[in-house]
Length: 442
Image 1 (cartoon, rainbow, N blue to C red):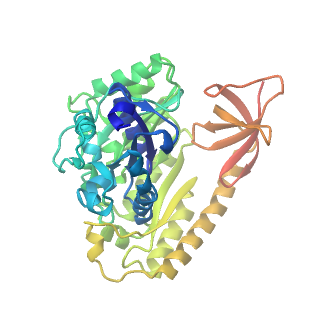
Image 2: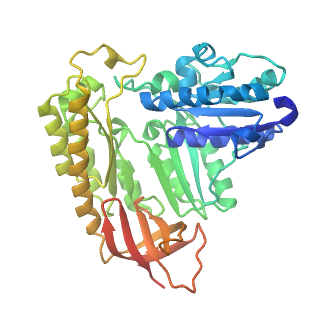
Image 3: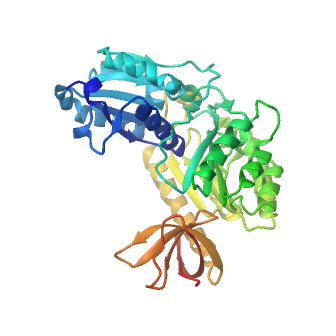
């Protein structure tokens, strides 16, 4: 049977929370077009891959997967590549994987209904590839959210920062913000549907500029937090150059805004930050950290760090290690530098060898592990509210997440059966470098 007769689809998502939420909106669009989502590739008439190209390994995984499933083309299945790899590689994907029928970048998802009609008509090479200058956002009422309690809202798409290592400005287009009324309408609808936690998303979420001119990013955070029924508001990812003290003030003054900030630094060396074209130096980053640490609330800070950027010396790397000691992050997502197409860093000399990158990454992760061990121990004896996410049946422990975005495994009286989405108070009794232990307070 053809895809148009079966109207079934399977989607696999790689990459960040933006991609996860994009897939939720793509799923909603497909359902609205009469498709039915299935749980396995074998059942599907249309197989979609929502891709990530932030690092080479993520990109290669997509092509390996496409090669694995080429044999399924004989069963009448059709394949689509969506997202960042689609925008980056464009029609070259058809040459590399001839069984692919649709290539669609994230900036073109609003055109999916028309693109699907072309596939159903038998077209073999259908493309949706907007250039960087598009002003359109992907807004849809048909979002198939995969969690009934915690949901995402994209408030800004694209990126204008052009960091020397990053492909995102080329794959997701220029920065374009949704108007605040649209964001708040979606948030209110989510609250009415029973959602209690909302996470605002953007490549640089705090670069948000309300097209209506009515709300700053900090004011939008507060307005979402004021919606009846909403207990937690998160946001990611922030760019330090646009991170203002007003954001800290908003978190400090409003309990519904989670006490967690993810503020990517990438390097502790001003020299490397300049080469990366990050638009701030070490001192400017630490000034923002000082704002956060001066808050009345205990705001958890996490970050991203790249080791082995071209030209990074041992002295530069030591600056990054010293930054860990100064800030004491509660979590670090650390990676080796990965060369990406179309980025300025491809032309940089003084590449760091793989052995040095591996050694530096291991040293950074070991130092951060000890910092987190100390940081998490400070919570012993505290009471924290968690949103229940599930239960580890083997250990007899419930799993929850705190306002600081820390995983908390806890026990509860056997007579109490907790449901995901419920909020409970937990006394912290122990810790590991990446999680907390506790007992529910009855």
